[in-house]
Length: 103
Image (cartoon, rainbow, N blue to C red; front, side, top):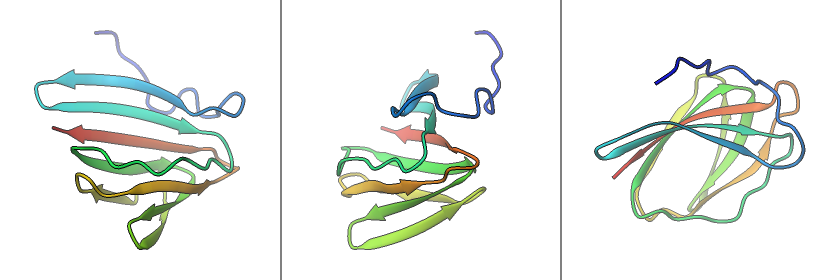
């Protein structure tokens, strides 16, 4: 496995989120997600727990009936089968997430 830098690239190109799988091992997958400004996602409810941390920028995350404003360094656990979606992401800097899927 070659080394990589979590902060490069630090700006999204175009309108699509960039998903990079950093590690898959046994019951976990670690992803890096780079979101362009004003990203809005569809409602999703995975069959596994998902831990997310904002490394750069900010985002509004809807989980069930709650809305959370997340800034750099904020983290939250999304329990399995919890409907959630991104409502918006920051412009400067672009929102960079570290995500751990726990199966």
